[in-house]
Structure formats: structure tokens, C-alpha cells
Image: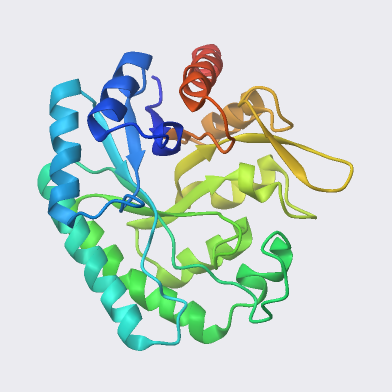
Length: 288
């Protein structure tokens, strides 16, 4: 057995067309691409965007399409905005399911910053779940009870990305949210490369064990810590996260979902894609 390896679209957001993204992913050896739900700086309708991806998939022979951020904004006090966010998501995933066989889709509940605007974004412990109200947790749970039912009917699953400055910013907060939703079609996307930006975090082993039955997707990236407590993004095989250990732990916990690799650094991201893919394929081949 091997795991599907997904290319995050951020490896190819330097002017590449959708056709080029799909073809490059296939040529390099990826099984699929995680696209965003919307393209930045492009004026287009939902159907136009999805049709462009479907065309690129057909031309290239790409096997799998996953969709990611943005999710509906469920953190706002404006009920009309929350309701529209859910309606827009329903429309998008219904249309996407008509064009692609979706398996899992990465999602979020809307950014959650500290009300004190003087606090820098990079002080992650002071945003997200640290400042969430019970109302905001309720809004997120209610919204994804609706979207979870949609996913269940369409035959795919949602996975909240563990990401700084969101309600689901740490393993424990993500787990709390999916337990509140209590739907088999709603789980977690573990991005431990985001978790390491926090202090006092659980180990990889503890994290995977705690999330295992709700772990539907994983994002992989790497970085090294600097003396000033900041972090510097690196190639997948060159940072402080040991992805050989990571994949061993996933296997031991029965994980069989897709693995998505990312490029959170400037420069020639097409080169990074080929290099990171070669590394993770080597590790998977050794383990699986």
C-alpha cells in the first residue's frame, strides 16, 4: 500500500495557469493537487473556476482534486455573513462534486484575531482558540453540522486544518471542535508544521494518538527554530520535524488518507516541489 501524495497549489502560484499546474503535478509524479476554493486576484465565477480545473484535469490525467481554504467566516458577529458563508460553501461543494470525485477537503472556520489590534499576528498564542468565545465555538459547530451533513450526502469528508489564528489552531482546540460537531464527515487536517510555531506543544506521537480516529488528512512542511524564537522555513527533509518518524507514527495509528506537501517559502517553488516530492516518496517507500 502507498498513500496518495498531493501537491498544495502554493508550489505553483507564481503565475502558472491551471492547465500548467495540473500538467506539472502529473509530470513531477504527484497524485493530485489541493486547490484553493477561490483564486486570488482573479475575477471569475465558481462554475468558471471549477470548469477550468476540470479541463486541466482532463488534459493532464491528474488523479485527484482536493479543495482547501477559504472556509466560511463563522467567527463574525454578523449572522447574515455567517449564513451567506455557509450557503456559498454548499453551492461550491455541490458544483465541485458534480465535476470531481471528492475524498477529503481541507477547511477552516474564519480567521480569529485578538480584539486588541496592537497584538502582532505572529504572537500566535494570543489569537485563535485563546480568545474564542463560547458563542464563536457554537457558531462554528452549528455551521459545520450543516456542512457535515452535506459532505455525508455527497460522499466526502471535511478536515479542519490546524492553523494559527483560527479556532482550530492547536490539536486540542481542533479536537474539541470536531467533538462538538459530532459528524463522521468532519475531522482534522494535522499540519504539525504549524503547531511547532507555538510553545509547549504536545509531541508528534501524542498528537497523532489523540487525533487518530478523526485524522482525515495531513499537511507536511518544515522549519528550524532560530535564537530569537522565530522560525525559518526549510525544505521538507531539512528542518526539525522528522518526517520519517511522522510517517511511521501515521502508519502505526492506521492512517490511510492523502498526504499533502507544501511550499511555505519564497524562491523557485517548482524546484522545491520536485525536491520535496523526491524526499517524501523515498520515506514512504521505506515505510509502507
